[in-house]
Every structure is written in C-alpha cells, then in structure tokens.
View: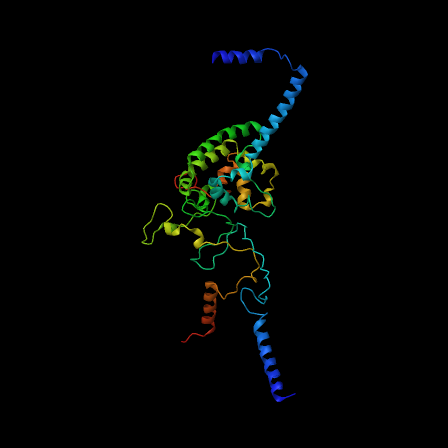
Length: 165
Length: 195
C-alpha cells in the first residue's frame, strides 16, 4: 500500500466521521423538546385543569391581585359582555355572595371615581388568574419570600447583635 | 268558476262507480302511511345539524362559537346539536316552533342577518327572544338532559351546589336565568337586563 493511498484513507475516514457527527445530532438540548430526536415526536405533559375549590388563597403580598379560586374556562370577557362581573359586580355581589370588585377598580388613572368599573380595569384576567391543580414541585421554582419572614429575620438579627451603650 | 267548483263537489260527494270500497280503504291506508312517514322524515331532516348549518348565517356565526363549548367538545363524547336546545321534542310544540321558524326563512330570503355586522346588531334581539322562550317553558330543552332529580349536588362545585340547592330547587329560578351564553357568545349586554 502506498503512502498516498494510506493518507487518502485516513483523511476520508476523518471526513466521514465529521460528516456522520454533523448529520446525526440525535441528542439536543432544546428547552421545549428536551432530548427528543429531531425526527421523533415529543410527548408533551398532559394539560392540568384549573383548581376549582372555591377557597380563597392567601395573598403573597399586600397589593397582590387575588388569584381566582375557581375555573374560568370559556368565560367571555370582551366589549359585549363580562362574565366575571355577572357575579362580582357591586350590584350582583349580594345575590351571588361573590367578592365584589374593590374600590380601586372604580378610579381612572387621574384618581377620579367613576360610577362603574373603570375601562382600564375591565379585563379581569389581565391581573387575576386561576391556579393550576398541580403539585408545587412541578411548578417553576422561585426564591420569593414573604415580607413577614423578612421582617422576622431582621428582628431576630437585631436581637442577636447586642446594643451599644 | 262556480260551475267548476260544483262539478268537483259533485264528483267528490257521489259514491265511487269503479273502485270497490275495499280498494279505497286499503289505498287510503297505504297512502296515509306514506304521507305521514314522508312528512315526519322531512320534518326530522330540518332538525339535523347539516340543515341548520346549510346557511352561512348559522355556519359562520353561532355554529363556530358552539364548537368551542362543552356542549360540543367534551371528554364523554355526548354532543348537543342545534335542535336539541332550539326545537321542542314533543309533537305539538315542535309543530308550533317549526311554524314560527318560517319567519327565519323570510329573514334568510331578505337577508336580515346576512353580514357579520348585521348579525351582531340584531343579536341581542334574537338572544332575548330565545331566553324568553326558555324562561317560559322552564328551560325544558335543558331539562331534557339535565334532570334536577338526577343531579348529585355533592359532586358539584360549592358555588354550583349552593345555587342549585336554593334557587333551582325552590323553582324561583330556571336554568336559563344563570346559564346564558354557554353554547354561544353573549350579545352586547350593555343594555340588557343581565349583569
């Protein structure tokens, strides 16, 4: 075997190897597809349903828009009708025993009080959302801390450090 | 004209000269069956989804909205078609409704809702007419499937159970009072009673 032939084989082997590696990226790290091959179908997780227990949840902070404790599937909120207000409007809350919309929803951006819900507060689901019926471990993790625990910690720290006289 | 009527009346009132009584009775019987069967078949044909969505007014507007709702798409595969809610089941009321519906043929011919804008404009009137009909018959078409006595209130959500065990049970309210706009989108409710 001549040296030239040997070199040709070696080069072609290297080239073939690179080509094979380039042609078959069977494993990727697409955040949506995960480790599924390109020519394969993903099996998406099942869609969870909204929690529908009608129990008010604790607000995580004072100004938090309360989350919706019931399903709002197919609720119509458009310029024609607002299904939320059919129960949560001031005039309907007595009959339905739903929480009436708060006083903040009646002011326009200049602070004027209006007779009915302000147009900028009309689309309820801009701020108020349902919660899905899933285990907390499955949800996206975060480092949010309740303000009470922050205060308690700083108080504990103040107590631990002796005051100067 | 008068002579013509007289001649026909004479023919009808004199006994048959050629056909036997048996033949006339049997042929009348068979003819009756054919007529009645044909009449009912044609009547049922006007109750099909295909017939209702044959016109673009229904197909492009209300039928599109229906498809997203629980009465059309659901886990158990039970589907309510147009006539299940909009046409009474028993014969007398069905006939009455079908006769009223002849006005819809009039509307179709003269194009009272033949554009989306016209439909949206007229929608509140159409909806209120249907709500009044269901209110008057105590939501009969709902109750054809949703029987109060078969409802397990403990399997319902708290809000649903509360409403059903009070207003619905005491008959102070009927299904349509709360369940408006569940199979179609609601019309412009600005001037409607609801809300």
